[in-house]
Amino acid sequence: MTRNRKILLLEDDDFDAAVTRELLEKCCKRPFTVQRCSLLTEACKHLSRGDFLAVLVDMNLPDSTGLHTVREINKAGPDAPIIVLTGTDDADIAIAALGIGAQDYLPKTALDSCALERSIQYAVSRKEKEVDLTAKAFHDSLTGLGNRALLYDRWRRGLSRSRRAERKVGVLVVDVDDFKSVNDTHGHEAGDTLLMHLSAKLKKCVRSTDIVARLGGDEFVIVLENVRSKQEVEIVRDKLMSGVNYTTSANNKKIGYTVSIGSAIIDPQAEEDLMQAMRVADAEMYENKARGKARNARSTTMMQATAP
Image: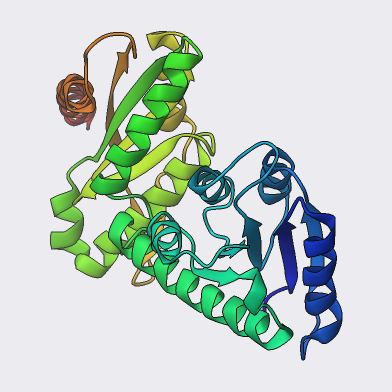
């Protein structure tokens, strides 16, 4: 394990906490640094602010009991391995805890420095594999953006947050103009470079809480949480259209490109879903694309007419 050796210990019993801390800080081959919390709410705050190698969890606390504790810790620190420590060696609880996000389960009666160190090592290894598999399942392999599966998962969560805040959700559909000609003229490697360039630009132009996903080909979707009106969505659209330099390089050649963007807005209180919003935004995007082609055609005609 090459990362930090900081452990979050969630334990309300002072004696058990002292024993576990002693084992981790003084008895292991390589000592750990321990941050102890006695309440679930306190532990969740630490998880949101700090980077911990693993979390050791007593499930029964003054402000939480049972599997609910594991679920909340997993939500607060989704990348942190969880090891459940309990005073009862109950196989059913162990299996249930593993099923909702814990990586290991140790009875307190079986604790010693070797068992703890081994359990932490195994938990970190299992979590790393889990995170890697999740990343592959929910992210586009070329751009690193979310894929369709992640988009729908994050959409449902974002809709719930916007509903509680009594705000709306905006949707933008982004499409590269005449992308086929880039592949035909410069090759597919250049097309991939363009898509990675655009992906980075899209992420830079929105908030970290917003969702940027690639649906396939040159089609991207952005979901904007907590917006007040369609005008706010259109401000982001205009920023993407006018404030970004869409020029990249491939095969030692500069490639300029343009995008067309459509927008839509959803009231979380209504019965609309993401597909409906995407259809509305998609229709607007194609209208904007047609207008862009018409402008380019008129410009070309005027230039030819005024040429000597």
